[in-house]
Image (tube, rainbow, N blue to C red; front, side, top):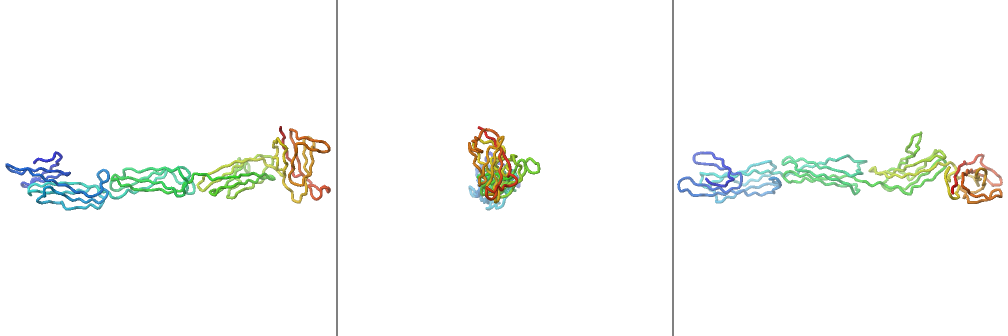
Length: 377
């Protein structure tokens, strides 16, 4: 017998019969026995209907039929077969003969994987705050596949834009070429809220701090240094209001405030302000340095109809009776028939509230307080 060089032979003698298995599509040449034999050829061709994926795997139902040239006298196992389930290897064979003495066979093994991989996610970390992520996030996708096995899976990274329904797509590919899609949905916000129009208004041993906050600001925290009870810094306010009044300050002491706005994702914005605490005499702040004539401001007193303001620079250099809780000092003024000028140096000032008619001379027993400022050129 003569045939293709790739012919795989397996013989079993049963009388004069011989069975030949071919592992691929072949054309077989057979020499009939006896003198003066003539050459015959038989071609067995599998006709395969299905979707061929990767690495020899099919990803759909596989229908296998057979064709012959020339038409054989008899066939075995050559009926049409359809593989509908996943399989790691199902052999199908077709055998045929031209003369009932010599049989030729073709065997093909089919691997079928129609099932998409199952995909899950592996997160580099849990949400940063309240179910939100506020920093770039890397998500690895991992998969399992019962038939052909996983070839590879993707990894994704998200860094914006802000989105309460952010989506990061991914997938896994199996050895057959099936792609299992997946996605991870999450809340992402990396933008800090805003605080604006911050103002600081000193009071009598107190300060009023006000602000405007953006709509996404969930909470505002105010920290003060020095803090309460002798600590270096402490939280003096936490809430959602647009302002806060801090009390119990020590006159003449400098305080530093940090105003912190946070959103639901724990993004933070920080503003800092400082002031020197005042008593009833509000401005200038105790020990403040001025280069122009200042306006003296103090806390109004209930039922006071006027005030007596006195300024000392070594000796008394001014006494005035404004009817409001402020007094605008000038560069020069007259006092006791003598003109005085605002010269460089240290000035101390006092305020007494007066009641009724000024001519009655009814003053509070004690001044509202005393304070000082320094004039420099």
